[in-house]
Length: 322
Image (cartoon, rainbow, N blue to C red):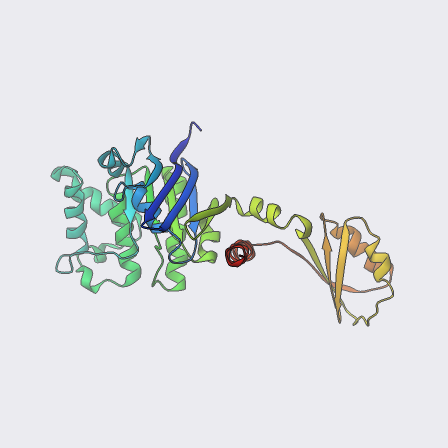
């Protein structure tokens, strides 16, 4: 692809007989936010280290911003900002001093590094009074923001975030993820976000890849994954009526005759109906014509929790089968 900025082809990493990453092939495009999702130990961090040229693959290639990460790691590092799950700063220095020092290490001239550091701290939401605090006085959430400023100061094309929201309170997580999406959209930055927090990934990512035991099981947008995975039960309509329905329900055979309706389950005033396509108007009409007072209609769509559990559980089942 012309706009591919990360290209992994057959990427494999072995430690003895253990395959930490197993034949990973993946393309991530410019400006995209991609979520690499999987449990601890799935191989996510190992993959990131190979992409940065910090670990040599056993087989395959990782190309980032057009450079082979194994052969030209310095060129990759110039283009990529990396924020690990555990951040470290010099506690005896202020936040601004830390960032200026990091900027100088990245080759930013002294004449402009301080101004850029202040600009980056403002961009990530750190206030003027925060600049001159020692990082030892920073909360976890503030350190994550400073870590993002650290990543951005060299103006990278790609940022890689490894479990970036660990230890942050829910409000801080929401703000941090919103900041990531804003930066990606405004600056055209490609973001690879590695996490095992499903809800957070779902909030911010354009596409996700589910990574289990070193293998990329599936990747795509949430809508695509949902439709592919739950083809036969993608549309589930829950209808609530005012009066409780007793079973056996006399209208059940007629409802099952509606086009696309496959099965239903009655629980008092609630009827769960599984369809092969969206036939909600026909279902509502069916109840109204038979004198039921419809008080609620809800169509279920499958989110990342269901997608992840299905792939994860299926993989465990297959692994356990002799």
